[in-house]
Image (cartoon, rainbow, N blue to C red; front, side):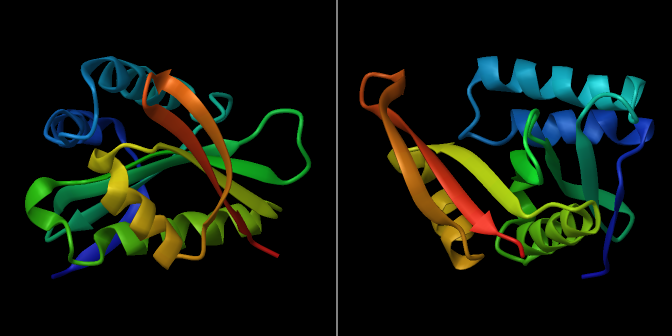
Length: 159
């Protein structure tokens, strides 16, 4: 594997959308929002409030992470999306992406990082991934997404 983490570019859009559409955990309505966020960043990267890092393996897009500062906070950031191409999962790409994002967030004065995710079985691997990277569950909103699907809020202190 020849992994490179870099900022997103407009030429990544098609590959990123393909990754989103091939990630079974994401519902069609979530993919629509993810596309809107990506397009917002590509259109105005300075003012969109979103940051994207792309993982490239052997010059092909293999995954990405999207994050941004939480409005009206002092140093709190959110991870909005992270996805790795189906055939590339389990190779450390997601770990490389989150470590790179955390490093960038710290450089920008970030002190606290939050992730919101689903409580369903489909997201069990996602929750374990974040726990392995030092995130802990700090809140649960029952039936948030739909009956039986709680919103979990995970947190990691960066400094």
